[in-house]
Structures are given as C-alpha cells and as structure tokens.
Length: 102
Image (cartoon, rainbow, N blue to C red; front, side):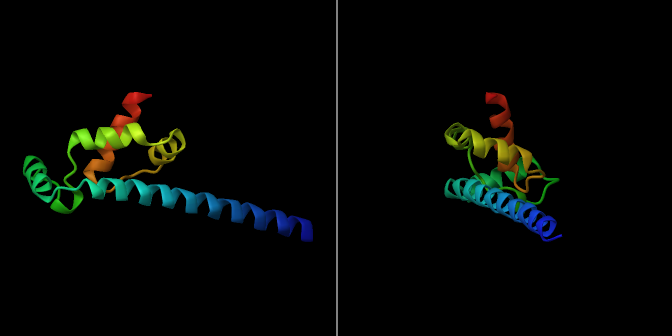
C-alpha cells in the first residue's frame, strides 16, 4: 500500500519537474525574442496581417529569429516544438525555422 503511494507520488513529482523545465525553456525563448524586439517593425508586420491583433506581434526581424533557431540546443528545440499552440507570430516563425533545419 505505502509502496504504491510512493510510486504515485514519484510519478506526479516527475511530471511537475518536467513541466517546470518546459516552462523555463519557453520563458528562455520568449526572453530571447523580446531582447530582439523592435516595436516599429511589429507595427509594420501587423499592417501586413490586419486580421490579427497587434498584441500577437513582438516585432522581431527574420534574421534574428533564424539566429535564435540556430543557437538553441537540440533539447530546447524539441521541447519548444512540442509545446503548442504558440502565442506570438515570431514563435510560429521560430517553430518553422527549427523544423526547416531538421
């Protein structure tokens, strides 16, 4: 009885740890994107896609997104790809560049 409770607890703990790592990776990637943010470029991209609200555009230029994709570790890439849906346009672009390299 106690053994099965311990096993259940360990499984839940492993899931929490895995989720925490995923959140850390998503925060890391979002931080990298926001460091390259250009609001005027975000306004420009928004004008090209008026059906989406401005809040979904950070304003990161394509060469910067490609550099971020190239510099991510394979583990980060896999975990980022598996975490859907993405909120920002640039995250979707990053997703595509990661898939393109595979």
